[in-house]
Amino acid sequence: MSSAPIICFGQQPCGFFPRRFLFAKFQTARRLQAEIGGEIVFFFHDSDHDPRETQTLVRHRKTGEIATLNFTFANKIQRKWSPLFLKRIPADWQANMARQLGAYVEPCWVDAFKRTSAPNVADFCLGMYHNMGLMEGIRVVRSSDPAVRTAACGIPDYFVDLPYQGEIVRARCSDGTLRLHEGGDAYVTLPACEFGPAQISPARDTRLRWMQSVLHCTHYIAGAGEQAYLRQEDAPEIKFVNRAAIDRSDEAYTEISA
Image 1: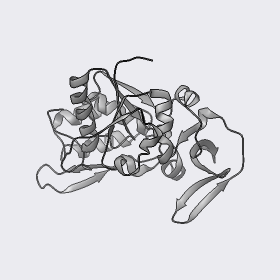
Image 2: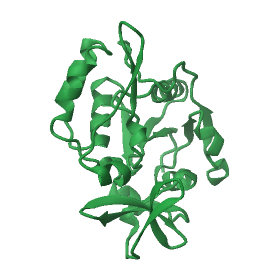
Image 3: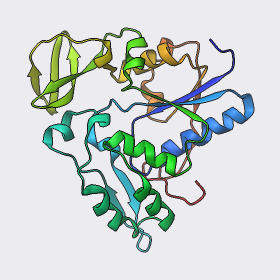
Image 4: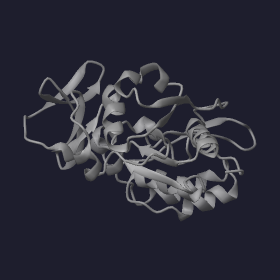
């Protein structure tokens, strides 16, 4: 294991223009790297399935009115339950969205959007972050990577990627039962089946331990929401660093200085 610092931050794909809190994590990690050296690792949790994660909040350039943009999805099952790395992008979505963007972002970002090409939601978001110049010198580790999943430690609370009605869905495994959340108290229970580590991704409360068993990071940039639930006792070897404050944190970062 390297003795050099490994500075990590984690995030689901969070909009095709990244939310401002993610940009703040990038900036915090780079400032810390300038102080102590080492490597920056972006733990890209693309196994998440919630379509709300990729909502992109932008302000109209003239009126300042906020609009909520998002991907469209191939079908209802994909939208609700497929992991983000398997949510397919319909063929006409990008062109239709590009026609709207000029009202909200600078032309350079419209061009970056048009240059991005990816078959699924997670890859598209990551491609946009690259095209916006945010990813230089940063290593990406994806929770969807079978090699990462196979190398990770066992955890008691997790999701499993399984086939369901012609799609792959992310089912919660609880007390040996596989379920899809319909909303509220409603669930779809899936038949019991065999599965292996390459199909498993962590739940919120087991994500840190699972991630750390692969990354062995020395420092972790924690967002405001993460600070409330991260089980720091699961990784006492990590030094936790609060991400820098940023205004309008849920809105998309679309400033030219990126």
